Amino acid sequence: MSITQSIVAALKKNLVPGLVLQLFALSILVIYFFVPAAKPVFSWFGVLKQHYGFAYSFIATALFGGLLPFLYLWLSNNLAPNRNMPGLLIFYILFWGLKGMEVDLFYRLQADWFGTGNDAKTIITKMAADQFIYSALWAAPGITIIYLWMESNWNIAECRRAMDKRFFCVKIPTVVLSNWLVWIPAVSVVYAMPAELQIPLFNLVLCFWVLLLAILNKR
Image 1: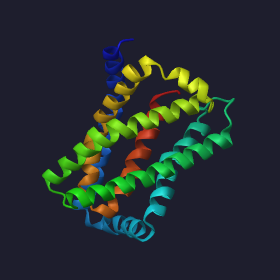
Image 2: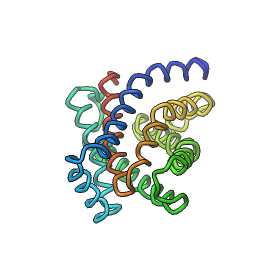
Image 3: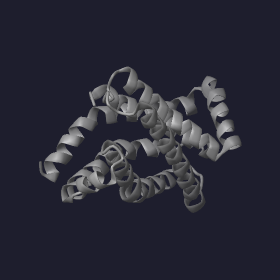
Image 4: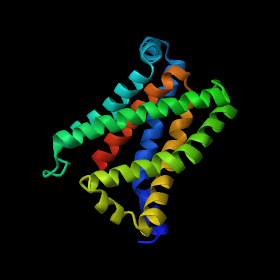
């Protein structure tokens, strides 16, 4: 399959879940700004994030990005039966917990660089830095490589063999473009929220996205 065919196939697969995800994120934004009764819930998450900082980011992202998706995949028999389930669970929790701290650090740096406003210029600037620098050059390729290592049963030699020309010229660009389709609108909504609520919203969108993909794909 050529890179064009791979990208088209990935975009077709991600189009519907991407639209659903974007609607979900937009709904959260609308509820925050236009449903006063929901303010206490948002305030509670905001206070937790402000009080616990990176510890909140680790625990919340490990829960929403790692534990909950793992439990769904396990209970729905979508994990290979020969896998080391305790080891896989530890991987999901540690990997996504650390990734949550990384994203939190990146959000803080963006606040220092571009400010904390939610005007169109600030949101677009943060989205561009997020998706076209951080995600395209680091996050999406890094996650793809780590998951390839996991799927290679932690065998470094096997993982390196799989990282051939096609992996870098077809797989990685496909992942990056699929990521843009879904997350450009989603992170724009995230950056429209107050700083203390950006990680909580990111966690919700991440969990919803992973679960949606798990439901739509057997593997």
